[in-house]
Image (tube, rainbow, N blue to C red; front, side, top):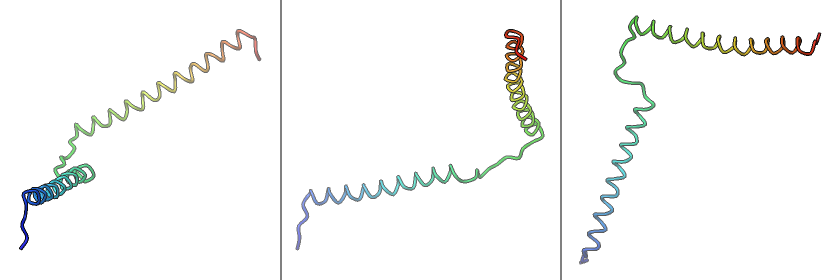
Length: 90
């Protein structure tokens, strides 16, 4: 017959708590990863207002890109024009 000391009992409780905590942590991590990479469960349908707002965002981005390109090309044209008139090139 073997005798268990208090240290043995405490060590066993620590190991059980450690295993329980590992399982809980892995379950929590799996839940978070599942929520991040899976599709949302309740997805609402887009209304016509949402679609118009999406179109306005797309047109806004296109307009900003066009303004940016226009500024760059306009500056290049102005630089070329002033260099020609300043140094009488061409």
